[in-house]
Image 1 (cartoon, one colour):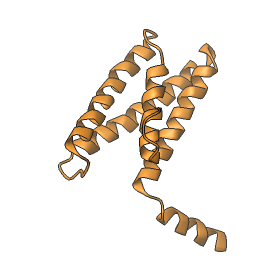
Image 2: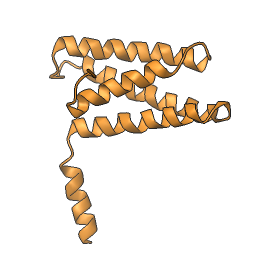
Image 3: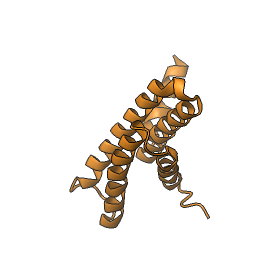
Image 4: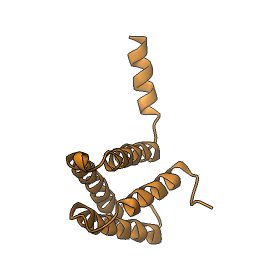
Amino acid sequence: MAQRAYAENALSTRTDRSIEYELFARVTHRIKAAAEAGPRAFPRLVEALHENRKLWTALAVDVVDAENKLPSELRAQIFYLAEFTQVHTGKVLAKKARIAPLLEINAAIMRGLSGRGAKK
């Protein structure tokens, strides 16, 4: 019972940023692991890319919401990245593009969410 109470308290103290970071970290790890596993893991890669698309779609919907408190320039940049991710994912699935840009974008978002900013 004590463990459950602690777990519930820990969950209630998580921030939106930490939850978003964890979602990006999970999907990015899944994409990378499937890509590194080679051609036989293509179905796993498709699944991971689908999850990444869903995450970016949710982000795009969030940034176009008038109630979103992010600066408009940042919202526009996030929306552009969401569009790019959608298009580039299609190219990756068609085996006409590399996966690296998707991983780099997700890593950049995770740096921002963690407060570490851009790589120097």
